[in-house]
Amino acid sequence: PEAGARLAVAVVDIDDVGHGMEGRLHTLSHGPACLGVWPIDLGQQGRHDRRAGRRVVFTTGCFALLHAGHLRLLETARAAGDSLVVGVNADASVRRLKGPGRPLVPARERAELLAGLRAVTYVTLFGEDTPARLIRRIRPDVLVKGADYGAHEIVGAREVKAWGGRVLRV
Image 1: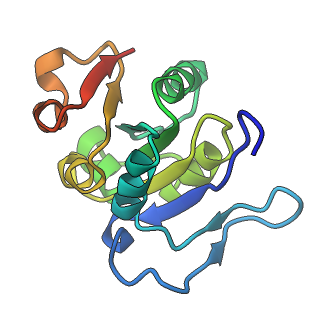
Image 2: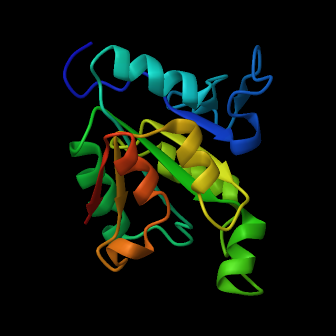
């Protein structure tokens, strides 16, 4: 494919990552720019990408109201590797972290918005308060968080560094 071409966009639930996803495809939107949920095991896909010499980048957030700062973070994250996996806090997780009445936009819609961005390769939802389990499953080469997080506050930083990856604060 030509440089910058997007091979696939996937929106998957964390509980489906690597567990019984075979043969499932759910359409999120219709028309020429149809987005769907492809049956992709992100852990296996990450291993495949690394064997092919591609760097897997991971970032996470609530993305409650997508704004220009999010876009800059995602573009910078993608520039740090060859594929960008975005972990999105599920609705219950956002409520626990941000309080009642949140999120304003449901998780599937937040995921769909992110999946439509050129910088994003894969989107996955997770229900935990932290992405620790997801990070261990995907094993990214680069973990990206906003500069508003201190180095010691970044969940998964120690694990990513332990397997030879790096942590990038944007």
